[in-house]
Image (cartoon, rainbow, N blue to C red):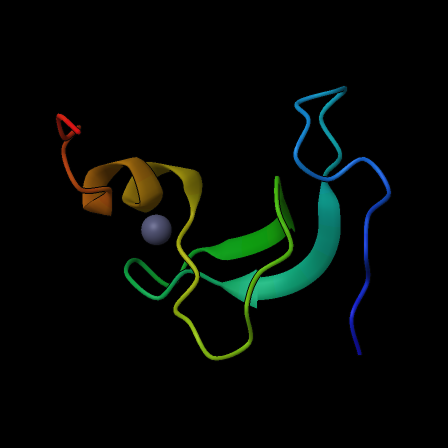
Length: 59
Ligand SMILES: [Zn+2]
């Protein structure tokens, strides 16, 4: 199932996706995410997300 947001591609008011996940890194419970998580990808809490995020690249 695909939920297509009508306002995709624009950074409007932050829409939090409610759910029940666990951080793949620190196992912390995550109840909301600022994006729709892909089921086949690890989910990180905010801390680990910024920790695991690749450094800024110059395009
Ligand atoms: Zn974490």
